[in-house]
Image 1 (spheres, rainbow, N blue to C red):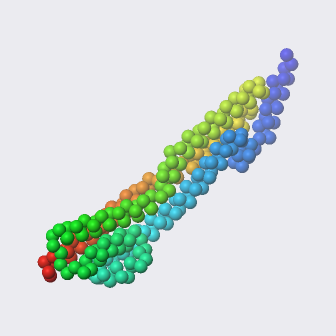
Image 2 (cartoon, rainbow, N blue to C red; image 1 turned 135 degrees about the vertical axis):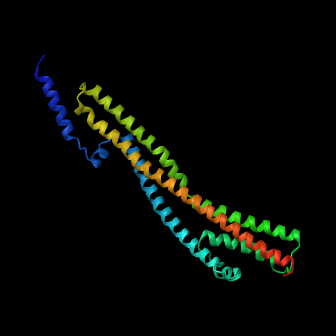
Image 3 (cartoon, rainbow, N blue to C red; image 1 turned 90 degrees about the horizontal axis):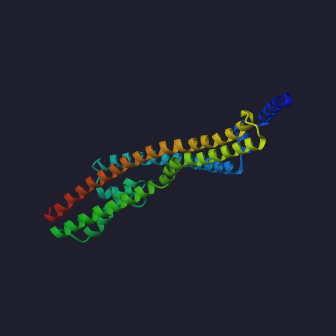
Length: 248
């Protein structure tokens, strides 16, 4: 056996490795079609996640600011009718829309009635509560939009990347069998491409999971805030109904 053959094989493998581009762009271009498809899916999912994250961050910041502004106006002592006339045409945030839904039900029933007996008063109170509850559920449903996508990417992206990794490693073993050379220089390019798919999966999943947990917490707190406001507003309207029932 020619002793120079192992040396030549090693040199050839080193030349192949040197010719392989290990940059991020190079790993993507030289990847197998399946691995490349996995990378594209993960990159697109990551971009869409960041767009959702930015949108949710702006949205929650805006609605909390507007809710604080509305609550300041609501508890300032200004008449409810005056507040309603000012914002009813275009309520600017979920809390204002919840207020308007309660006031709409109030006005539809109270107009034309000077006093209320017990049954009418109880029925109106229930309709007001139901109207505000429906409004809150609708607003929370709107705020929850795209949250499922964040959760899905956070839970599935690592596995999609892992699929690309497994596929790439299978190709690396096929390359070993084809070249009959177990040198690391022969399998390194394929393994690098495969692991790059897992890395992209983690890059997509980690921000999605963190953002989902944060926004889910923010959403829960905001819903509690709306529920508390609706309960307080319902109590205020209930006192007004009692005053009308007694003729005061």
